[in-house]
Amino acid sequence: MTTLATLPPTDEMFRALVRRDGEYEGVFVAGVDTTGIFCRPTCPARKPRPEHVRFFAGARDALLAGFRPCLRCRPLEPLGAAPAWLRDLLREVEADPSRRWRDDDVRALGLEPARVRRWFLRAHGMTFHAFCRARRLGAALSRIGAGEDLTRAGYDAGWESPSGFREAFGRLFGDAPGRLRGVTRVVVRRLLTPLGVMLAGATDEGLCLLEFADRRMLETQVSRLRRALDARFVQGDAPPLAQVERELAEYFAGERRTFDVPLVTPGTPFQRAVWAELRRIPYGATRSYAEQARALGRPSAVRAVGRANGDNRLAIVIPCHRVVGADGAPCGYGGQVWRKRALLDLEQGRGRG
Image 1: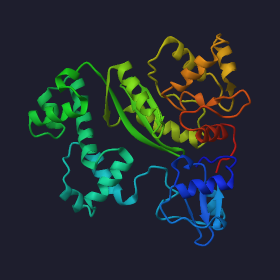
Image 2: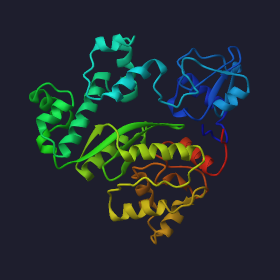
Image 3: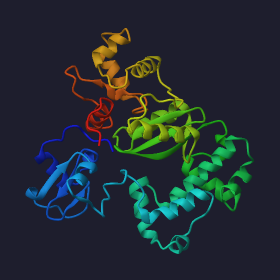
Image 4: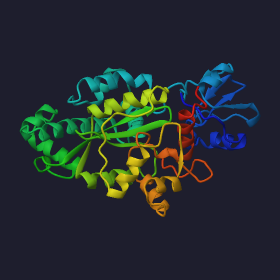
């Protein structure tokens, strides 16, 4: 796991622990001397007194200090990972995305439907049944885009009647299936990284979205991308998603410095020039916003460069995190400044653990 080279002040971390502040996920873990257990900042367990807490940059340091991982918040698992009790269900969903699940099917796996529903609402913003419908509709849209008959696409995706398929399709995509033959399909899914969950999206041509799931501008970015590509977003998988997942794992392991996944970057000519210049900043190096503007031949366009950096929809792959303040300090990162610092620490060989 990537860890920060330095920790925030102890009182700041303790306040975050008491608040269960998700913005500090990936910044520290907390060990409790009276129990011998270490936790994430967001652990729901009752909070100890400050004199009993020790803070570490990552799980490795806590383990070496003799602490055991908490069984409630599971700090050894990637942030956002599905819990062990849910994995059999997820495997069955992936094995047959067209299957229509009912509560009795969930109970047959030894799971309580209400518990499954709560997890999906927290992790995906939708219920388990809505997640399954989205997967089926995404598969249907893919078949329609390939020219398959509407009725056959609906049956193959698990609908028993054309009218039921059209009704469900219209609720999700806001249009009848036959009118979406010409639109771009963006397949999206969650990716787990040491710095938290990311949302990745790809067309048939390449990766067009990679953002941290808690970014405040995520909804705006998705809306802009939808308009730019005249796209519809569906759950599922695509070759660029599998490729970027593999390349991100290599990057966080310190084994990759550049990304080879094909990219789709709709934007103005100026935005595209800024994003292309970002990709020319070497791994392990940084530039100020003024230096970035000069590299573009637009020395007076510092603010415009900053705005274009903020409009980048492909975090890490297009490395806007390598642009820093004039004093060299990390600042102005949509994915939160602590992540920017962690990415720079990783690339500059600091704080690996």
